[in-house]
Image (cartoon, rainbow, N blue to C red; front, top):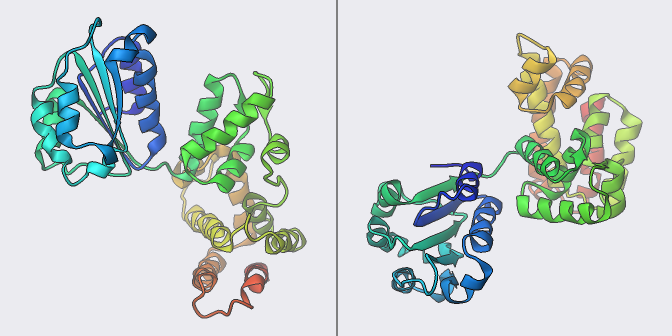
Amino acid sequence: MQNAKNILSDLQNGIIHPVYFLSGEEAYFIDEIADYIEDNILEESERGFNQMVLYGRDVTIDDIVGNAKRYPMMADRQVVIVKEAQDLSRTIDKLASYVENPQPSTVLVICYKYKKLDKRKGLAKALKKSGVHYENKKLYDNQVGEWLRDLLSKKGYKMNPKAAHILVEYLGTDLSKVNNEVNKLMLILPQGSEITSEAIEENIGISKDFNNFELRKAVGERDIVKAQRISQYFTQNPKDNPLVLTISSLYGFFSNLLKYHGLPQKDKGSVAKALGVNPYFVGEYTTAARQYPMKHVSAVIALLREADVKSKGVGASAFATPDLLKELLVKIMG
């Protein structure tokens, strides 16, 4: 299976296959490939008669095959794009017979989001011979930051690791959502500029001082005053700062800190690779390791697991929940 970059590169170089089956958990890359085909394979004058967009909920496999077997009109090829094809998951394997012998003048694109093909069945096997089968997985938090900076670089912008981390912390790993917010920033900021945490705060509304990134840093430095100040802000703005996500963020930090203690080599490159973080953040683990010995880190992880259960309503009243983070921080840094 090819990755998205290779598929796009082939398309840009005129290497076009008769069938593209795009599947997996991350919709952004599926849309990126499908949109490129929709916008670039045919000339604008050819699209009226030779480009069709179908939706899985409205068609059957027979409908798709029927459209794919048509001949193009006054053009060398036609394009048939099936969006939301996951709605056809129960019958999708019936497409195998067409994929085994596709119409050479048709480019058939199947957008099968959030699902995977059973590789033991006929369609997956047919795609190996006669088509392109692209399948992806959700990116991890640290991978989203790298993807974001790479995306911005191609468009003539920069973003420092801290700003990227804050954006991902707030928006999560949904690349389409992150991309939409970044596009808003690019409309405001001139090309060639650096997207900073201040620009994010001003234009997206994510506080550069009161977020999970700053809380982790304060906890790592054992700065009790700063951590409680952020905790108070979170309590006053619970919708923007869900407790479950805050505890998850702290859990990830201390889990990495436990790994850090066990590393034989603690130079920046080795730590960054072992923990799967940007080298920019290695200093935070070095600082935190001086504040929290391994035994203390293990105790903190136990506290976070207990708090996670309580934050979800198990063993804690709704009345006590707002104070849960404050009490947790006291136990961690006490």
